[in-house]
Image (cartoon, rainbow over all chains, first blue to last red):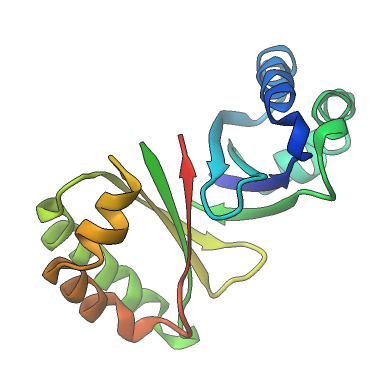
Amino acid sequence: MIREVAQVSIKPDSHAEFEIALARAHTEILPHVTGLIEFVPVGWCVERPHVYMFTIDWETLEAHMVGFRESENFSAWRTLIGPYFEGPATVEHFSL
Amino acid sequence: MIREVAQVSIKPDSHAEFEIALARAHTEILPHVTGLIEFVPVGWCVERPHVYMFTIDWETLEAHMVGFRESENFSAWRTLIGPYFEGPATVEHFSL
């Protein structure tokens, strides 16, 4: 099992809208993604207040980087939450 | 509730010893720490193989930064796991 740890800087005036979009993406898109075990919306960073962290546990690294990233589900996910990003997300993986 | 996210670079030849020390610190020290809800040894980073992540959920930020950091439990914790660190840990907090 692999934990994706994603940190995204969100436009300062869009925090509430981003949370709504993320919740929608979570319920509408992620249930259809193969190899996804659990999505956790961790929350806002105390030290960097515009940074939001979420984690996703995957069955394998490939389930995320190939199966999801190259799918239409990823396009739909990014269409929903991408407009609120200020710059690219920082994504790393940790082996559990 | 606050999640501490800690990332520590561990000396290349000390990964196994660090994991043993961390498990010992977890079982011997953390149960005595006030305001600590849950410790999770997340694991090793895929992209930066010498980096280990753990998270600790705290009742409040102060429980970590004041109650724990200024206690003898913190000295004992650092004495156990500190020798394996390569440089300072990166620690941030996220509001759940």
